[in-house]
Image (tube, rainbow, N blue to C red):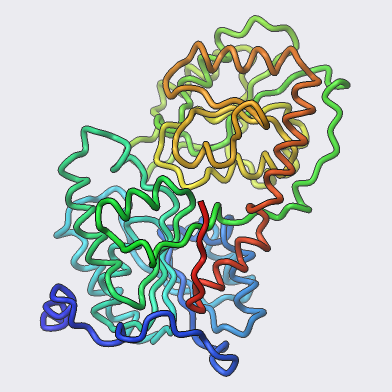
Length: 403
């Protein structure tokens, strides 16, 4: 393994000499392995892609840590392999065992294509795949997270940049991003060359499932929703402040989501208890059926400063014909078109956020106008059929560009 590592470092691995070779019809049964840091992600964000791959004749194998969604993937008929992965750890020595386990797994499964999700999986999966000489690697980076958005993490950012550059190297390696800002950063940092970056906005949402016929003028109660993991960087503190300072009658605020114990940015119990004391704030916890919830909502609010790809909660809300409010950050600005289907506020400017919420609460005609524009924008690029088709194009070596 050490000699293989030396070849990777010096760019001498085999299997990278023939870039972007189209997969022939006879090869459509090739094995595709998808590696994520949670089964939850694969089931909730990529199930339609998995089913599309299977219907196209691919042999699909999933790799993720076991969680409450693992059995759902198995019941759906997918082969699954377990991997232990500590999402909190940034200690490189602690990852050596994971790297070795993945190397053995790739050599056993012998995938034709390996699809990796999230930065940690991209780094560990990409390095181990190069060691195992996996023919084709697709690295999906759905947002660069707090490593690149938090200025205090400079040294970690330097290390991650170097690791990403090494993990994604090779002519038979491609990177998928969800917004142009991330694409530009990866090229500017010389992590990946421009011709190997593909822009596919979002992870795909079922447009028919989220379709809603709305009549804001008939709403007797205006409901603002925050739906995301309960992380500080997602802007939950500002959303709760909106509820605490709201004086508009018949307005209600709802939070759908749970803390993420595997993330150091997760909210604490003291904050959750504070939320319980706010009269017009409803804590829904985890919600399985987002389509049903969004039918009862008037406005989606996500004041996130996190390094998003394109926030799925905003994409689902656009599919459900909702007006949107978000901070003007990469990812959010892709789906929220300021003044057309919602409002983009300056990051951290609570007064601007509050003004946008008050305006939509008091203007049902504007909510109708923005909601219709949201649905039209969703249908241009974010429907799951469009996303899955573009993803398969990347598998086949077809350049996917945009933005």
